[in-house]
Image (cartoon, rainbow, N blue to C red; front, side):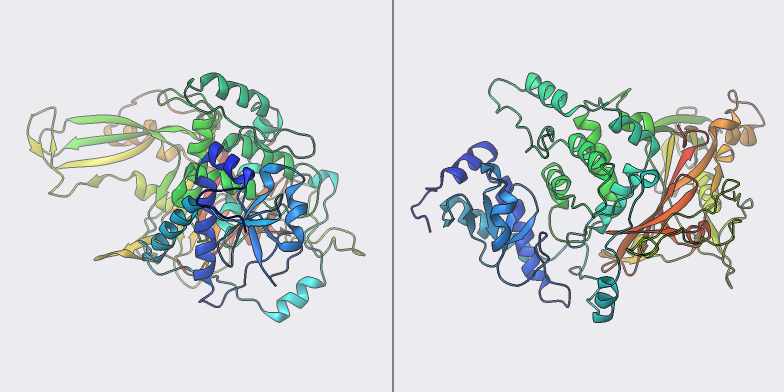
Length: 554
């Protein structure tokens, strides 16, 4: 290999000059976690090009693409930005252009730092394991069917995403965002232009800072500004709506997210809700969002206003504050403690439709037609225990709550510290309503241990948020009209997506359901299958996405 204290490889020197140690540190952290993962019974890493796990594997320092020795040059595409790799077996840098291993003293120091950090225990509990060990019967069954559903023109946009090793948390959020009608119209309408993004970033770059670099082109199209999550999300839209039916590997997006939020970097399962928060914050920042009165696409779609009323127990004075609302995190009460709620409002599919799309098996070679999706009228599975409703969770969220004795508030009315009652309500509802169910809770007395709440939560296809709006809650509390009531059309929502978590807290798997036209599909990494609305309603959700009534078809 190349010797010397520094690096004799011009390609490595060029990468260090442009980006420093960031790319190497991310790849090294991933490689270290892969070796730690070998102590548990889980599938080994494999080449993304040929699927082999035999021999040495290399991770590209420009993205998280894994290749074997035979496919190093094919992934490089003849470009010098794709010539540097990290050998997963020995953690050495390999240059495909020089066809040799490269030694660098600075990288050796960083490698030792990453090894020491990886040896520290995880703050949130035991190391994660792969929840799905390889079953030979499953492998044989998968070999006899298509890897993903065969799409027709009317099913454009339905494309599976490859699981790169416990990245199902990313796949479900990307599928949800891509099939959000408002985001789809924004990105496919070229509202975020990649070339313009690079130009604006260079204009804002101070003279003493390096200029932003454009990400590598693919198929003659610019990928946009490197590290820009908005550009990467725009590229995801282009890939999934390209008409290609083979599953797509979103390694570019994962790399950009690691650069934006290094706390998510690594080969471990992450929380889908936390991932969603980082993605939306990143798109907000990279789209030129502002701290107040922001008009970026994220705030226009997901932002609302939460009202908080504090009532003094002594003089009855009410102080009101307003905070931005991007999602609603709901506690899950015990089934026996759930408050009474109004009946679910279920809507059948449109007349003349079966509520189904071709599934992976039905569209395998030699098979034609449309799979049956069951009865047209949605129904909930009968259960032997009282269920918790999402309406009951919302009622608990907006019910008055008496603050504890150690939370005394200085009342602006009487000027004394007194106990108060707090009540939350929706002052302004967003176009897309995100309801997050708190299924992961810390064990009392042990901050590092968490448990999963598997309580079944019922949810409707159609949701009316009027009872939880500020105008309605204030009217009930004071018998006065605080303001003009919300228009009925602005409080009704339709379900468009769910994110579901299966298994235990430290070894689970994410899937999601999407509304596609008048039908529903299930996304499970590379596989997309047709499902009935009954199956959706009988699933146990983690995150629910509703869109304001009337906007789904726009």
